[in-house]
Length: 212
Length: 212
Image (cartoon, rainbow over all chains, first blue to last red; front, side, top):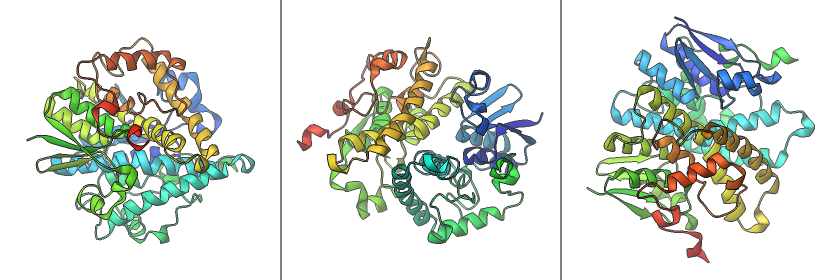
């Protein structure tokens, strides 16, 4: 049975799950969610797919999961990959996934949305500046951690990497400049050189180019 | 060996871990972190306790863990409690923990900080209003889910409840009014009636009263 991932190209949270599926070798396909025309806000989507009104949603036969972190863990259970190779590493992987959800992707996704997908007149400049300040603190934590390391945990890619990279390959400006964070920059390059890696707009359907 | 939890009363993220320890029956004690005088920003704190510069940090002999969600999971492993009783429930518990970290506690903690612990002249009103709007959407998701349910997952308290309640018992105003969300209100009352429950300022050292 082919695993289905309800997603759209612009969602870095969906990208985390899509990239885990892509690297895992499991059989999967994306199902396009028309977020920008309100698909995730529709009653039917909330009732049948996700009462949190978000992507990604993964459907594997009778198993339906939401939240990128939970889907990533499921992919690890099914494939034996990306979860860390010792109990200590498994906890360290979870630690970075929670941190990413709390401090990095949540802020990055919101800031990118506000700066690129809202009409210019509606962009809240004080909110954007504030979020960018918080994000700098998060980039600094990640950049410092990656100094002298190839991967966030252990010596191969884990869900920690697949979570933290969620919004960092996108081309739309949101205040993240790779060159300012050399260890993040090298790590993103390293991850993009793994077999099967694809850019979010190549891995999932939908991109800003469709709406021009 | 007594488990130590580095924490302070004002931190709802620390409260999640403290409440899990408190309900678990494990032997634990809080260790005060003087956050408001910069303890978590100090070099030594980052080098020896948490390179993310945050509370809570749990130390159990040789095991040192950070991120409330990871500590909650560890408490579940040690005590057999709060993790969900089936694999499906375990995933559903994790789903709400990730959602809480992404959408609820992260925003609530920040908004409460800005509205109560910053000098009045420095409070960014546009940021506060924006975050309160996002929080309303989160309260709505949780309130709707709790309609007809005693607990977020299954029929007893889990880490989903202990995560989502993190900032919701605090007295400082940040836009959350219990009466506006009747199912959240009833659930918070229900949780506070569990044996051993304590208010954050009673469970952990430090509170705004100390700084008056």
